[in-house]
Length: 508
Image (cartoon, rainbow, N blue to C red; front, side, top):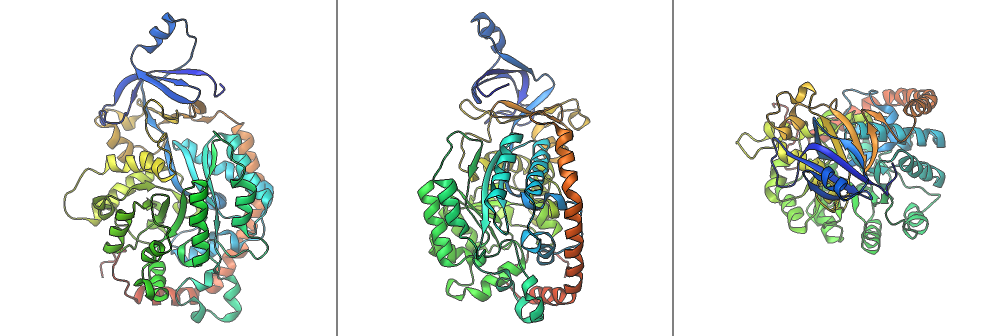
């Protein structure tokens, strides 16, 4: 099927805006050239009467939902799923992130992008926001990422992750605790690249050459405020305004990041939020991933400026980062999206896991009864993610929206009996029920299998690059093992400090 066709999805049960969240609405969905043209009943008979030939997709016993938007994801470590356990954030950075590794091959870049995209699609994600680190930067590696997304058929919002301050300068106590000979190894998510101005390259070679209607689009990815100078933040804000781009960055993921703000920005009251407001970055274009260690007054600033937050409950839990203030953000009116973050620390690109943990984190962090969280989690994974990337034509099933849709098998035991589609999606489903996935009205996953590429050949591509990755990971893991005494000392000092709140509940 090509994009320029008419597709009729017949006799499904859809979760429509303002509709029944528990039983859905029995309907047909007419798709024209990748967009939803009409939603109603009896459309097949009417089209036949009018002599209009259409391709049909039988949705009997299927729940139709908007495709999920994975609003915070990194394709650069998809080969590292299952490699780590009991690894706090600052240690994990030394094991998983590209600045620790030798330059990768183009083949590995392509393979890791494809396997990550396949996992996302199989979990009902039709859009990924890939904040990808390519270090050292190579234009061919960027091309490999884009080509992989175009070939597999997922919608991707690609942002190169960049910084101009070295990682060792941004983590409390590292410079003083680690012996000087180990300082070159203390990197983080993105490091300054002396050989190229990555942001200038991105503007000149990508942003100035738009491709209207393409499923791959762009965002800006300053790694984190403490890793970016004022000049780099201001360049980012200018580019976002000039080209109409969303911005994604990390903030307050761990207590160490909050402590760094308290120590380094006294002129802003120890607040990265106040710093970013003064530098002109806050606003509806900006998306703050994690936001675990926010203070109440900072939440008020985000609400006032219309700044968005992307919650990543899986990685926050596994990396011991803490429980984000989801309920407080909701009460303040901050728009929330959901992400599945890195494969090496989530370890799954599975939006059902993320939605469930999102809801449960609210349950265990606020003793008072509040609003139902299933609908809010589902909203963050759909409309909230669409808002984050600046696409009001995604994340909902409505006329005019793009036909990014997921068909869930209602005969799966997870939905028998069907008491509440929304609650069972969030609390019961694990991904097994995803049957068919469409992006722009094109079937990308059919009956659980990839429809746009040879899935077995894709897996062979991935396995061909795994031995080299494992070899390099073993060398890096051995090096980090030698660093553990100093890692532990810095960790202990961070946790002994007071940052004005506690997001990790230790019982002491």
